[in-house]
Image 1: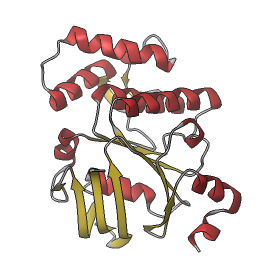
Image 2: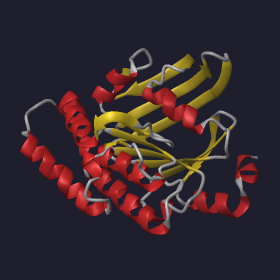
Image 3: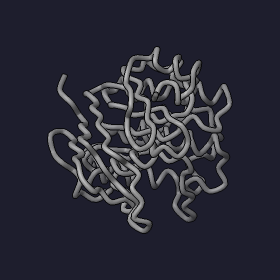
Image 4: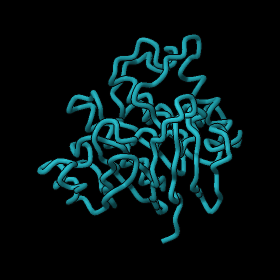
Length: 247
């Protein structure tokens, strides 16, 4: 199958600290596939997500990030976003003074242009909102300001589904969610994938994976992927832990 994303022998470090985090990551994600990366705290999973997204805090020391056949290592974060890469945050930023609805519409126009009217776009947003189970004034609040942990995660998922990226990177989207919220978020992830989006989900636990149709599970420790397999690998991790698998 043709690959949407190809990460080739990627080494990266934190600029300010000159601390090497990624130590030769290799990863292929095909069009429409859903991959999960699992690993212990501090192993570099979130760093990998940030480096793919182009976070300027990190420096690529060597290797390639090929997206739709193009090496995007030199592209800025906004340039990568315009090409169709979207990443959710473990702890989404609060942006006071920016109304959530205005943010959504502006972001959509930046990525997809103005071929659709605001009325059409608002209809799409309303359809997604009806499935998320949020407060009536959700869109009228400032972006993430005063949101609960669950509301912030739903905010991220709303953005991801509405903006229709080609590649969605979910960095611990399941952390802090209760059972009901987890099911709602997982349902939205499935709908995003059904629309053709490829997904990379980073998680510590397999509980959200139980609601998803996962193509591949990758074990990630000490800055690189050490083992890959199907969903049964997630069961093995839950039973035996990371050290046994990695060893």
